[in-house]
Image (cartoon, rainbow, N blue to C red):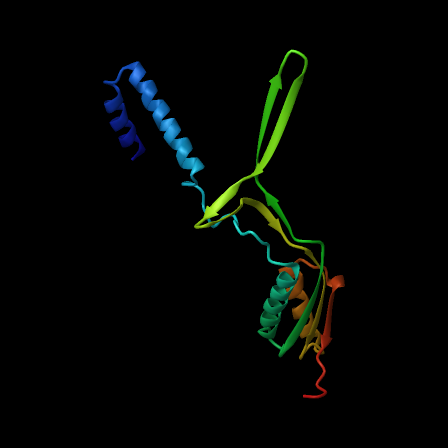
Length: 182
């Protein structure tokens, strides 16, 4: 396929003068740059253009509910309640365009630097282009679950939390759920 395209282009460009070839190269280069700048090659789902990060509390609540759902599906575990402790803050790394200009006159020279956030337009809204989003680290997990009095079930719970949240066993507490009041 590639050799066919190359041969086709070679046959068409052989009859062009060097000046026409240079002009064609410049036009293709400018068209490529414009296409890249317009975002034609970028995967729009790869980076978030949202104006807000999910709050730490929403992040924590989401982790807790997902973990409760998964632990309740584990053999020997009935109902599970999860509390997660986070450490740190949400952060977002924004892309910036930086430009420098210098001006000199007879007596002095001056350098100016400007830094502008790269914006992504989505319909009528625009948002900064996000290079990276990070959420707080999980410092500890408390699980209260029916069936946690069994040592094998308790080890399943600890193993699941260690692997999903990358938390050491020292920072995981698993307690049996009270049957009083049920």
